[in-house]
Every structure is written in C-alpha cells, then in structure tokens.
Length: 204
Length: 204
DNA sequence: GTCTATATGGCGATAGAC
DNA sequence: GTCTATCGCCATATAGAC
Image 1 (cartoon, each protein chain N blue to C red):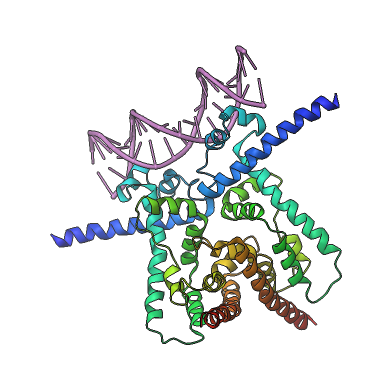
Image 2: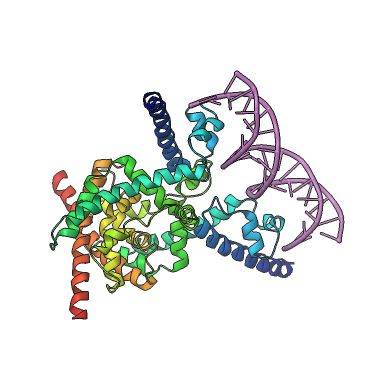
C-alpha cells in the first residue's frame, strides 16, 4: 500500500515543483496579478483544470513560493542561535545570508518584496505567512532600541536585495552583485553596531 | 474666449490631480493590477465613465504618476551639471536627492519599483518612460567602469528606497528613515569612490 | 491525473443622453 | 463633465467524463 502511494506521490510532487518553478518565472517576469493560471498551465503543456488538481488556487501557488523563503530564514535563525555573542556577529550573519543565496532563492525574495499588497492581504486572511527577518533582527535589537538601530540592522541583513534591485536594467553579473552585497553589509554592520552601542550608553 | 476655456481647464486640472493622488494611494496599498478604475472613481464619488473623461486608460494614469518621478530626476541632473567635479560630489548628490524627498515622491518611486513588469511593457510599446537614475549614474562612471563601481554608485543614490523598503512593517518614522538614508549614503559613497579610483588605476 | 465544457463574475473601455 | 447602460473579454474556478 505505502509503495503505490509513495510512487504516486513522487510524480505528483515533481509536477508540483515544476508548476512552482514556472510560476516563479512568470511572477517575476510579468508580475503576479498579470500572470494567469492559463499562462502557467500552457507553459507546462497542460490545461488550467489540471493545474487546479495540484493547487486549489493561484494564491496557494504564491503562498507555497513565499514559504520557501521562510524555510531559509529558519535555517539561518538556527545557526544564529548556536553562535556566541560577539561584536562581529551581525556582519557574519549578513555574510552567511548572502553566501547561501542562489538566484532562485533571491527571486523568491523579490517576489515577496514586490508583491507586498497581496502578501499583506493573505496574512490578514489567516494564511501562514510570517514576517520575514523580524525574528533575526530581534536577536540584535529589542523594542527599546532606537528606530535608527533597528532600521540599520535590517538594512545590513538586506543588502543582497538592495544590490539586486539596484542592478535591475544594468546587465550586471550575479557574482558581482554578491561581492557588492558583502562589501555593503560590512560597512552597514559598522553603522548598525555603533547605533546599538549608542543606545546602550543612553539607557545606562 | 481664453478666459472661459482657462477656467474650465483649471477645474479639469484639479480633478486630474485628485485622480492621480487617490490612484497613487490605491496603487501602493493594493497594487496596480488589483486596483480597478472603479475603486479610484468611487473613492472620488464619481463613476468609471467620468474618470475616462480625464484619462483615456488606466495605463495613462500610471504613466502620469511615473513621469512625476522623472521630473524630479531632471532637476537633480540639472543641479549636478552645474557642480564642479569634486571627490565628495557623489555623496553630496545622494544627500541632495534624499533631502528633497517627500513621502509622496517616495511613493511614486516605490510604485515604479514594484511595478517593473508593467513599466517595461509600457516602455516597449513606445510610451515616454525613461530609465531613471541611469543618466545621473553616467556622470560618475562610464561603460568602461567595473560592474562593481556602477552598482555601488547606483546603490549610493538609492539608499532612500533601500531604507524605506527595509522599514516596511517596522513602524518607523519618516524622519528616521531620512536620517538613516543619509548615513548609509555617506558610507556607500566611500565604497563607490574607492571602486571608481581602483578602475582608474587599472586602466592607466 | 488530465481532459472538455461551462459557470460566474469583474475588468477596461465605449456610446450616447443630459 | 458626469451620468446610465452595455459590450466584449478574460479571469478564476468547478463539474464531470475518461
């Protein structure tokens, strides 16, 4: 019994990931709203209806893609919690995040970033979509920290998105983007750490 | 004759700018594609048809909004061309750009940024939409410059967008965002200038 | 698991009266 | 300059045969 089920499952899973992959491509190229279920289905040589066998709605496809991103963040969070506190921990965290970035993972981040309205709407309707970097940021700052410190920490962790979004239309190699993101993360982590210790001086 | 026409024009222009303002609000909140002409019209207490008297299409509304952004950039470019070359010119340019930023102008930038696919499509269909920062960037680098230098210059000029996009969901005051954008622009301009002079050393 | 056929509804846009 | 009415289209989504 479990054999036949698992082999059915496997091919089903393959189709699912093909759908997710082509959907991501379209969502990035044409935008989420402008991509129709039909576009995705026909690019895979199937009909809309078949696609609805695998996902109950277009939104469900988006949710699945977005959640891939949070799986990544989860891993980073786990690593971070096993690190001893150190002055350069923020910089190393940012670099680790950049180093494990692939184009596809990055595309998912852009997707989440450029479709904030849909994602907020989904979150309101009780979908399981969480708030991204927030937990990681909370490892470095707390609610008493200055807005400046919190913002700088977030920007330090997000240089890869900033670099990528700056590179649009510039015909720049992915590797160059990673290099620049690393440099940027280093100088921003300096600003962030300085802002954090300024907070501490003030509160003591 | 010209009197009656101009007074008609004036009220027409007022309606136009009301439409643009409310459209921007919806486009940011719900996204361009998810905002219907109906949403915009009803928020203004009119019908779709009336709106079509002022703009021939939804795209035309978007184009008008986007073009506001380029008017800003034009001013910056004019200022820049009257400045003597100096090592800190990039930093000062970035700061000037940040200092003349208002929330509404920033929203237009976000709109342009989160709707890249639509904008690219419009550009292909021959609409008058140009490529943003590129001309300003070209004042600091050229086609022989390294990808690193070009990307860093662009990021230096774009810290306000980066700061704003990092601040999403963080409940941070607009003034704090400006402060952080300025700090960030300063350190990034350093990296950029260093990359530019590294290019020069290599080519000579 | 994929298909054909169809339901249902909203969208952008237009015609034409006032 | 605003309205009512309507067109034509394509979207998401479902029903049911194979």
